[in-house]
Every structure is written in C-alpha cells, then in structure tokens.
Amino acid sequence: TIGYADERVNAAAIRQIENGVNLTRATEIELEAAELICDLIPCAEMVKFGKNGSNVTTAAVKIARAYTGRRYVCVPRQHPFFSFDDWFIGVTAIKRGTLDDHAATTLVFDYNDMGSLKALFDAYPDQIAAVMLEPATHIWPHQANGDPGLPPDPAHGPDHYAGGFLHQVRDLAHANGALFILDEMITGFRWNLRGAQATFGIEADLATYGKAMANGFSLAAVVGKREFMEVGSIDKPGMERTFLLSSTHGAEMPALGAFVEATRINAAEDVPGHLWAYGARLKAGLAEVAGRHGVQDHIVMEGPAVALNYVTRDATGAPSLPMRTLFAQEMLKRGVMMPWLAISQAHGETELAMTLEAFDGALGVYRQALDAGVETQLNGPAIKPVFRTHN
Image 1: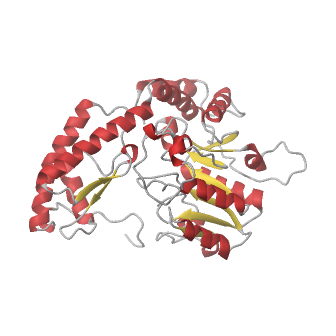
Image 2: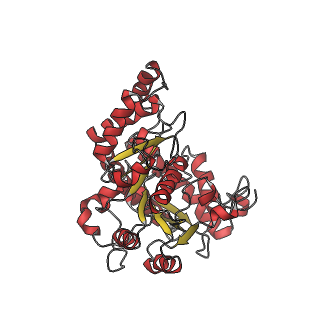
Image 3: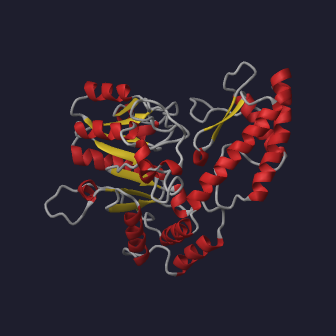
C-alpha cells in the first residue's frame, strides 16, 4: 500500500535485523505486533503469524475443522486462490501432485448466490466446518434485496451493507454450526486500516491477512475470536492438541518490525483514503481516454476504486487474452507495466499523468487491432490463463 522500498519501513526492518532476526523464544516485537493487530481488526482476539497466505488460510481451515469436528469447507468459485495446499489447489485446473481425497473436502459455491451455498448445507448436513471467502474483489457483496447497488465507497458507511450477502453468509454458516472465515489477504489494510470487515460492518469468526500488512515483507496472519483460536493453544491443560502453525520463520522479526511501522504510516497518513481517491481519479481518466478512442466497450474498468480490474474484449465483445497481451505490450513500450491495477501511496501526480499518456498511445494501437486483427500487432505469444492444465 505504501510503495516499494519505503525508507521508513525498511529502517524498521533493519532495526529488527540488528536485534537478532529470529531468536530462540518469542520476542518483544512479536508481542507488539500481536497487540497492534488485535487492537485494529474487529474479530481479532488472538493471532498467529506466518510467512504467506497459504500458511494462514490452511491454518484457518485447520482451526475450523478442529473446533467443529467436521470435514468440509465451502469457497466461492469466483475467488481464484486461497492456498497452494491440496485442500484448495486440488479443486483447480492445476491439481497434478495433489490427492483427490483432500480436494474432495472442498465444496464450491457462487459468490452473491445464497441459493448455491444453501444447497451445499442441505447436501452435507452437519458436515461443513466453515465457509471461507474474500469479503470483496472487483465484485462486491450484493445488498439485502439482491441488488448489486453502487460500487463500495467509504462514504457509504458500514450500515449501507447491513443484511447484505456477507451478513447472509455469516448467518447461514452460524445457523448450521459452521465458522465464517474472511480471507482479507488483499482487502486487509487496503480497503480500510481495519480491513474490509470495517468497511462492510461485519465480524468474521476467523480472518487472514498478508501482502499489504507489512508493505510487502513476508508476513501473514490468521486472527480470530478466542473461542476458536485457542484450539491451537498450548496452555489448555487436558485439551487435545492441534499442531496449528509452528514454523521456524513464522515470527521473523524484520517482517514484524515492518508491519508495525507500515501500520503507523497507514494510520498517520490515511493511506487507504489515498488509495480510494487515487483509484477514482485513475478510473475516470482511463474511461475518458477509452471513450475518445471509441473502445470503451472493449476495454472496461470495473470494480470499486480501491480494487480496479480491467477487462479486454475483442471486436465481437468477447473477453480476449490476445487483446490483453497487446494492451500490456503497448503500455510497456510506453514505460508503464500494467498487468493489473494495484495502487500504492507512492503513486502520485507524475505517475497518473504518465499512465494516462501511455494509455492514450496504447489505445491507438488497440483500436487498430479491433479493426484489422490483433495477430499481426503482437510481438510474442499471447498471455495464457494461470489456471490451466498444461504449460
């Protein structure tokens, strides 16, 4: 969220390198980081740190299974990645090397479709341990009446979303004895300093964080309510133990120092506010340029200002990876690498002007490709989907 190689964040990490990097026992910076995240995140009463998103999402699944004694986990098909572990990656196209019986414990429903989730609870009564989903992506939770409504905006306030899709998922999960888990790997510390839980006015039972939390340093966390988190505790005499997330580098000090400093900056300088405002200006500017070239129906900026996504379409209006490749190629020729949109505080007026200028030039070529064909315009092979069975 702050930007690459921020000197303040780097200095905080360096201080922790000088303090020892990774000590035999728990450290003061781990305690400080734990208290900080528990003060910030609505559902966080306890925390366990890890090094990547897969660590902590899998830990959340293990907590849910240990707490409920159940087998299955539900995830939305529209959310592309939760973990490289078998329980999730085994239900994708890239499942070579995974075990079918592990993947069989993951059930898939459709985001914003309560009927599809209810059908799973009906088909697997008293067997579902948890529902895990991202709070939002470029697709946001529908309102209580099923209407998509306007894209999320901080001006709406959390009451705007009361009774909507996320609240309905939570209520359905709880009514069936399952845990409600939010994967905030992307929304956390970006949509709101306190995460998208604060944006949408909802509390998860468990939630996962990473990416922006330490401004790119390798740190992730699973947080949640004590009732659930303490299944991984070692100080409950007589309780059957759960080997949760004990790893050599899980609480490495430099990343924790970076997290504490990044959070201070995010709060003091309202970095999430900058991301929302800058994203709105970028979206409007890109739309204006696309309109001038007459390609507004063929390169579409979608999603909330803080989570923009662009879709490339061919002359027939169908989604097109060759057109996406051409667009990325032409942007790169003009000095802007834009495989996707990820705004940071470091993006300012200079970067905005440069992006819009590159966009203008790239769309001139894009327009030609729509009229005459894209194949002759490409300098190399077209982009392929990440989730495919073969290289």
